[in-house]
Image (cartoon, rainbow, N blue to C red; front, side, top):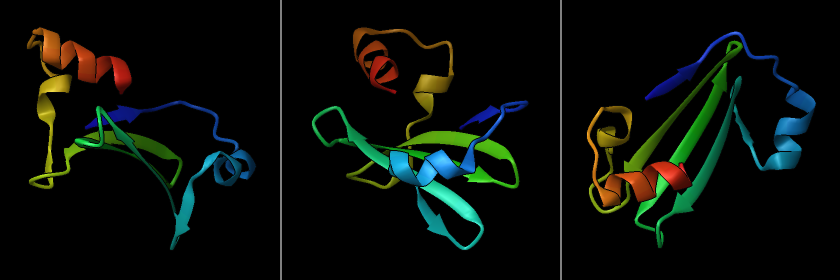
Length: 80
């Protein structure tokens, strides 16, 4: 999971970009890499977080946030 601190958030533009409001959270989902992965961006209490989830097993794909290298990981990271 990635966390982005100290960002100015324009809440008015989030919904126009495709974020959905769920309770007090703004959530954005986008499928990448031939619909094999789902990028989830969340804005909650002024904090932005994002993660990639493998659709087949519904688990977070943590290799994009490590120092692992390889052509597949680089492809995913570029789409992220």
